[in-house]
Image (cartoon, rainbow, N blue to C red; front, side):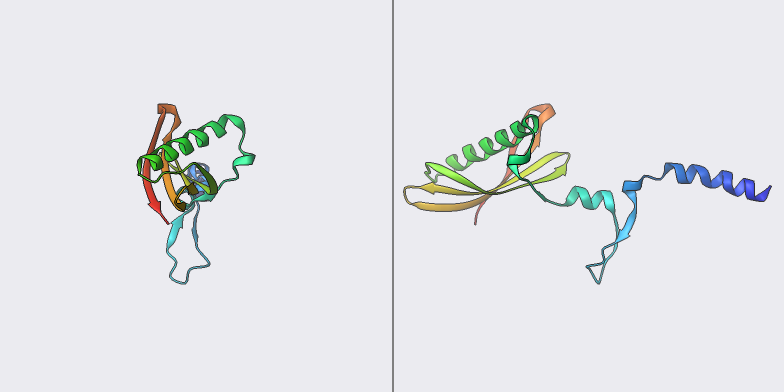
Length: 133
């Protein structure tokens, strides 16, 4: 009877546990603290290959890039074209898209990094960070 009671109490706890919420230690850090895996995944920037994004999602990245380029034009540096050096994404309440760009102008090149906060379901694209490297 006792074994049945213990088993009955453990079943709900086992069923409610999400595999994504496992707690683990970061083996690379000597002063590691316990970290919730789902929080770690959300906080990390991930490199993106724009050539491998399906067309429905590619539009989000294109509009984010257009927002960043328009912001750069308003920053006062005159440029004719640009090269994308790196593209990254970060899952937040929406999506952060970070581009590293080389702007090519008559007075030379300028390397910049900019972040656009995207909430596509609200049609919201907001430049939250823009810096010259």
